[in-house]
Amino acid sequence: MRIRHLTIVAALSALAVAACEPPTPPGDAPSPPAPGFAHAMTSDLSGYYLPVGEAAAGKWRLHHLFVGQTADFQDWEGGTRSATFAPLMLEFEDTTSAMVQTELGEARSVTARVLPTSYAVSDTAVSFSGQSPELGRVSFEGRLDPGALATARRNLGGDGVVMTGRLRAGGQTLDGVRMTWWMGD
Image (cartoon, rainbow, N blue to C red):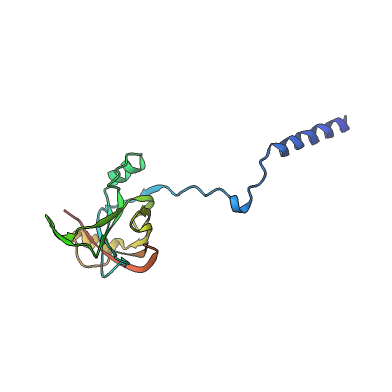
């Protein structure tokens, strides 16, 4: 009886081992799942975050980082997406393009809007990753100063720095990118 029991255990073990897939060689390891989209904000961060000073990668200068309303994040994360608008996006301008007159004043005629492939936003941090035909892979990691943002919001904008971060665009890394807040129109 003991031999039959050991034989059954050995047979079941052999079947279990045979059912397992062989380990994936290191060079063929599957890619980790792409980070998704998440927001965990308890206050209103919406508005335009404008660089203080120069933030450029080649001929492309960062014009702004846009943060939408909570409802915009909920829609995006729920699957309602637009090809031209996201609750978190970066816009660059081509500094070699002509200046044109718009209803808001003068602006560059060529811009590149980068929509997210992933993001995470909280009351104190912004993490963005996207892809652009003009700039390639674009990412931004920023730290928000909630006190400075609250002051800027009370003053309807201003020159105070509310976010500092690292921008990667056009194959370049820009550390210490500082931004002020503007509510937009």
